[in-house]
Length: 448
Image (cartoon, rainbow, N blue to C red; front, side):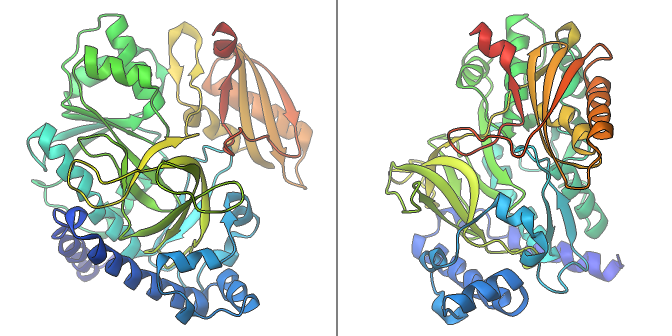
């Protein structure tokens, strides 16, 4: 990228960061104005350049002028991940790929999604991340320049984004964080805590299930470590029992973010931790029951979002796959962004490894998903070295060769002693809430 272009996107980000301290506290009418401006622009764009939405509007006799507020997006057909994966090219705007980034998701449902983002959407997401940084300032006592350890896969979405930002903008050293990436798997709790002690981070960030296991185990085994000032988790949930140990026994505040590859930064917890504040300047949302009818405050249903900033892969009226409970009122923190009280259905089991170590589901499944002909995969763990691999294949797959490759990939990430049965299926069943779990630990469930 040219020096001029890098300078432009650096200035673009800095300009949008300027308002981040105030925006979550603005009157709701002002936030709605920002939302509606972005909504109208995106619907016009979708009508002109995105095949799925052009046809959907034409079939229902709709035009861009019919979409003035977030409520109007419910007039579009409801779509979900399965519908998107059938024909992702139909949601991609013509000519929108150049200069942006294709993000390959980890696929907690057992599938990998690839979405294209334009540069403006990516740098807006970078600016919106300052909301979380400002919130952490109360715990870390500074907004810039501290150490952050991130337990994440080397090829995960956060890493893809950091590489893009590094290649397309400048970040002054005094503002940038000193980050260290650590893989969430393949090592004992003692080894991982030793990594924490070597780096001495102010903030530890990563998967909720993995961080819960790590710090609960550190407490149970009386491991000595310098406590970070805050722990931030996302991507999946942290068991409440683990959160209680970390906060009450270890004295470390635990916060969470709400993100997805479909919308990047959806929401965040404030210090009150009464729920997740949704960034409705960048998304539109509603919560619906099984019949698709919106629920009221305190109601639980499926979260439906529309990403209002991305002009590459356009997703409007998209059923994300999470069950959430809608907030009942304003948050005591004073932020006016709306709340969802609880997110359900975002937790896979950890994979138990020989020797007492564990690995996050996405680390183990990464190699299995790369097997030729595999469309979707789910792992059932019966004991440390015995698994059932459920898989869905493409039409052209060689099932015999794919089965051997799946078992080999599992052995490489767990143990050479692994015994695994491959079960080919038409579809992998979803949980009652509609989410498909990537890993299910049958041994742990039987022990309960």
